[in-house]
Image (cartoon, rainbow, N blue to C red; front, side, top):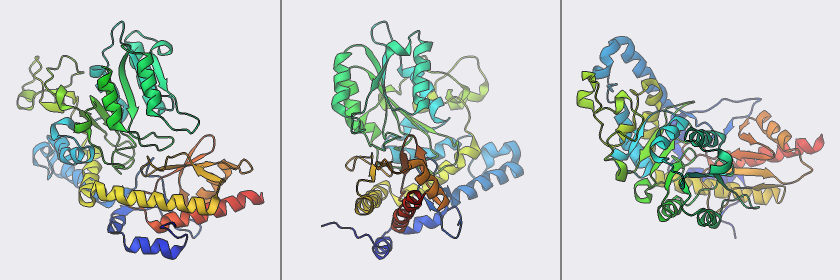
Length: 427
């Protein structure tokens, strides 16, 4: 017997018992359209705006206006060490030591910066493994790294393919590692696969890399702020992420990077260098010789972009107050309720690519009924003021985010999906 009921009253009872429900009020939600409230289920693409982020950006603008260059030392949050305000929160969300994490750059830039250190091919060991359905930017970054080292992607890029169930299976990766023993230099893999929403066993991925003598980097774009992480214990060589999805830090916001403690005795000879990677106490002496900063700050190239980093700091404060384990517990309830409503109301017509035992906030809904026009259903949902995400050929990605989505949102989505299908059938 299911623990859920397909009624609005039941959804409201879950909301009434939700200890995190007050966090919704800390975000700005899109407005009504056609008399319908917005149901925002697109946090996997762009998280909602925290009201605290608005406050913090305004404060930085005020300090800039009132203090000018003196804001580097005299702002209410001084700009010179500004990136360090985010360190504790990033360490908490990633399960890292504070000297292993850094807010800097954007995701693909960080992947390039880190691969410069950790992709060091030779004549025999030069191949890179990605998943075949990798986000295009990751693929392009890897292709360019291969070519910059004199290798062609057709020869040196290996793809981990999903099976017919659309899932990535660890056994298949093990086979790849066996087939190419001694040839693979780097695994670059996601924590959560962006298309199907599958949460990968990151600990096992890192162990496989270690067992096979190759480096591993994790793209955590869809994992940070979504699922609990333990990077220090899992020990990937590096990781990188953006912060505009589940971290709710705004379009194009500053991203972040992780380098494991085992690599933090670096001397600057295997990194791209910039002045903010120079040791702080002598940085402004402008000497021609380089003195490496301690910890992951060695990988930092430039001074932090204050207006982009302010929303990250605001978001991290909200996560610290809510607790990632609490958010994860609610997330599992939200997706469990959604899964129940889909099975109750749509049977085999609408399914999910996302495995029930390995999912975060996102569920990738697939229109299985070939009599339905999947794109038309998505467009009808848009007209019904549902904010979701379309992926070819027939996938609608939605993400009930525990910081600001309610159980009634999930229930209302199911009713509007039903209406969108009815409209499609009448055409």
